[in-house]
View (cartoon, helix red, strand yellow):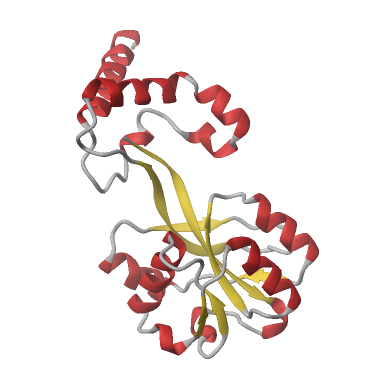
Amino acid sequence: IASLYPEVLYIVANSRTGIRSLSDLKARRVSLGEAGSSIEACAMTLLQACGMTRSDIQAQNRTILDSYAALQNGELDAAFFLAGTPNEAYEEMSDLAAISLIGLGEAEAAALMEEYPQFQETVIPAGTYTGITEDISTVSVMSLLVCRKELSDDFVYSITKNLFENLEELAGEYTLAASLSVESAQQNVTIPLHGGAQKYYAEAAAAQGKQD
């Protein structure tokens, strides 16, 4: 139905471990998110694209909250997360514990995107969080609003129409929604758009054309 916003890949390390790069994760206790989650899928995709396997790390499957707690109490050395930026949970954690963000090298990001073009280069700007004094290079993948293809065009049209007619209210609850537009919703979509969504976007474009 729509491409919503970038889910940024966060690699978070306990600062006391000395982890500074992706390769430093070898033999370390690392949470890949919950088993079968999108976090685990993205983390494993990155590791494999960079020549690493699950056996290269002491892999654990923990929830987001459990991972943050384990980083704080020393049970984990590092963890992968997917989140929008800025992220309230990381912001709160960075104020409470000695954690740091691990950036990707240019070659690591390139290796991932060459094999999986749905990923995009992304920067977490300096100053976004406590202790982040320089830009952090990473990757992101778009969060998509999807539906079953057998749903009627009328039903999906109404979902799409309601989404965009209530953007202001949605942005008041979730700041990342403020960047969503009819144009951005059709970008970086890696699966076919439903006919009902296409109908709404065509009407929105025609209405914009008349205004111009």
